[in-house]
Length: 248
Image (cartoon, rainbow, N blue to C red; front, side, top):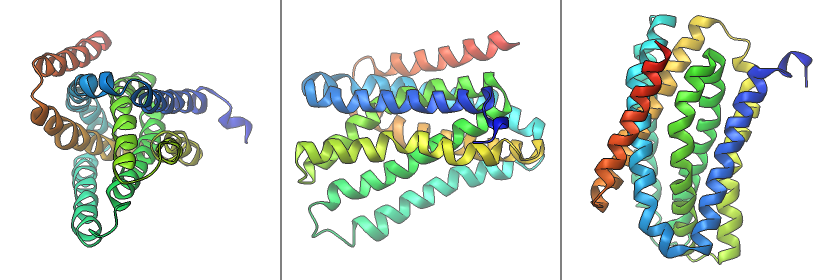
């Protein structure tokens, strides 16, 4: 590896992505060991992470991207609708056309989560290259939603007919290891691009983060309707606001 990459701009996002992978792995092992506890409390992690991701994106990441690149709003829209179209493709052309395969119940969501986790790794590269504060703010919400993501991946694979051992291995590969892999592949490229294009990529990542928080995490919280899920969401919002205010 070139010596220019052996610095904070490489190791910090890689460390954040490895932390995310560890939290995902913890979710997988926790649901295997404490299935009842995991199912009971997953929604609070989801709600808190949604509050952080949405608030951090609107209050800091989006404004930061616009100051760096005039085209950032277009990339923001592309990031949001890009993930939306990908999910529509999975649901409309894969899930519905392969109803006969029991394994598809677990495999299709697993592939979607794998791509999402890979993109998370790229987001770490983008945000930490902009600044440590921007990266840390994005990482807070992203790392927190990794725990329930690991739980969901494992449970869907088991429900799809895989053995517990197979589900464990596949969930670790798809949901955990893909995040540092995305960082490793993207960091050498992102660290060499121009500031204006980096701002555009930051807008793209903000669109992806808003999509995850608003269309994946919040709807799950609304379906569960746990008593304190709203408080967990508001706590996430408050944490993001306090962190943003502390920078000013």
